[in-house]
Length: 325
Image (cartoon, rainbow, N blue to C red; front, side):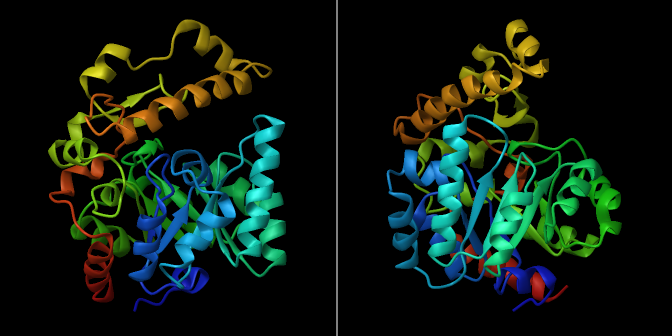
């Protein structure tokens, strides 16, 4: 058991978060990480749209597999009123079902903080630099998820070390998100001063993750240089494995999309268009057992991932390393 401010906040034994992933956060994976002593995070759209659970029933399904803490990710960027209303409902349901650890992303989290704190809960916020860290602190968050330039999915612009140095004086627990694929990377982050890590790519290559085997094999095969940034999937840089499909698509957003993404009144519309397209593409790639749709998100931690394992074995093995630091 590793005791620090983060593990006390989350109520866990090992300072590892299974990051919320669209579309890879299935209930079995979330439960396995929590049961082993880390904390699995629910990604609501993945749970309901990809894995076809009613949100409340999905939480209860996870609860049948673990009584230990689980969390929820709230993407709170301004978008359609319908989505904002749905996210608000999901947060209320999560609180009603006993969740007390939340991670917010892509927006001002003050309203989430107010609602969660009223129920005795904790909110950590995704940040990529000091500016967004200070915004999160002004909103009252309890900790920061420091997303660096080695992360999978939406990626930061700074190295693990540079981002830590930039925000370490702000007085909140810091979690390293990006580049953690093996015990050595975990130990390095903890020795640097992070109180925990968030892993996504490492947990895709597990027995519990319900993605197709072609995706998992692609992670095992990939090297750091195979991870590229594409603007063509969500409109902002997304870390993804370079495949023939990605090469054919190209990495840069088109001229019209770039123009709309710069406009105050058009950027949210363009992001909605991208989001709808990417929801379909990434879901189709996840469920395609033949592996013909090669839209595979991953971070540079692929260099440390050598095998498909049980998620719980990964958590417990990393925990043994962490207890010695």
